[in-house]
Amino acid sequence: MQLFCSILSRRMLALILCAVLIYVNAFTSVKVFAKVCTNQPAFRCTANKQAEADQAHNNDLAITAKAAVLIDNASGRILYAKNKDKKLIPASITKIMTLLLIFESIEQGKCKLEDKVTVSEYAASMGGSQVFLEPGETQDVNTMIKCISIASANDAAVAMAEHLAGSEQSFVKRMNKKAKALGMKHTHFKNCNGLDDSIESGHYSSAYDVALMSQSLVSKYPDISKYSTVWMDTITHITKKGKKKFGLTNTNKLIRTYQGITGLKTGSTSKAKYCLSATAQRDGISLTAVIMAAPDPKIRFVQAAALLDYGFANCTAFQESPDDITLSPQKISGGITSEVIPRIEKKFQYVLCGDEQSYKPKRKIIYRKHLQAPIKEGTIIGSVQYTLNDQEIGSLPIVAAQSIKKACYSDIFLKLLQAIIGK
Image (cartoon, rainbow, N blue to C red; front, side):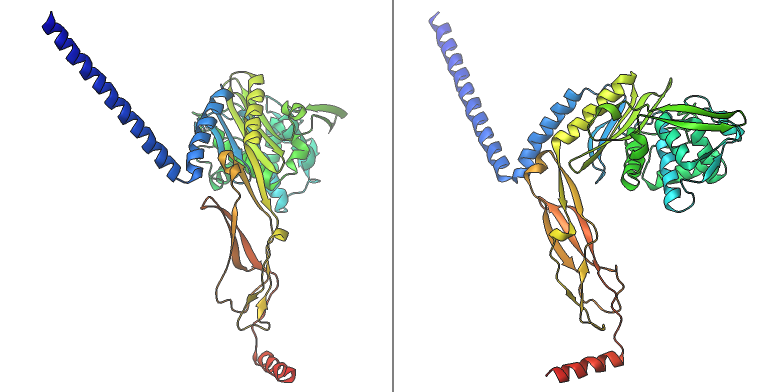
């Protein structure tokens, strides 16, 4: 018995010693980790905490749609993503690309809002959502944009495709070419309206790709909001049967309920389920939220609003106008004048998200060396570079504010004469 107690005491002592060693080792490790983290830039440590907070918030968002994405329209930065590159059926959000090409054609002078569009038999035969255009009926481009944006009219989309490209097939080629130019790597179009599409047929897109074309549309052509935020409107059919009013009702319910909404487009079929690309702007921040394959029509609106809320709550806009930046005239050799006046033509914008809001972007002005005449107005002669926590976040070009000709012999003689007289 005495021997047993002795062995037990030794074992207890060994266990106690092990526990002490484990505790000391753990305490030392914690101190070492704390020291390492403290020695790192503050941004990294707080960024890790922010990432954890963002992940917790993302979990709270509980996006039940098959795919979703939230981007900042100014930079294109992804703020939230779920299955962002998954190929899915886009349904009528296909028409975002159709509208983008329509506005591009207007900008290029290839068509005008007043131009008349004649509806073909084929365009009039479209099913699904439509405004019941009749073969031979004419409507102007402005009305067609209304029909596509507000009522998601398949017939109007095809009529515009034929008007701009001669046929829907030719227009679809333009759509795919534009998709490639925008970097839409998981998209291919087979038609201009998203009707009766399938991945197998070659008509598909992804949440991120939809965000890219939405970003391009609202950023380059903000006038789209004049159409996409209209709740109700009417058009007039003028046919052999006479005149008839037809009502348009917007399919995007957020335009009545969400503060700062700027558009954009809904889509739904039995195969695609319920899709939405929603764009909104507040306090200098422009966001696009895309929901694809939501199980319920109401859910797409609720979850798109939740994504937009998340973006606006976690981001602030940093802006700097040209007037805020002091530029100095730059020396130029070989010109009729010895200096060139620099100019910045647009403001710098960047959206600070999460932990970035604790920092202010820094600015550095860099000019080209050894400037020589001739120089045309608008020639880039330098840049304003912006960094955030030593990471470059963007830049603005500095251009020549005037043209400067190369000096000839008479100019040199005149300068020399003026210098002599001046003395």
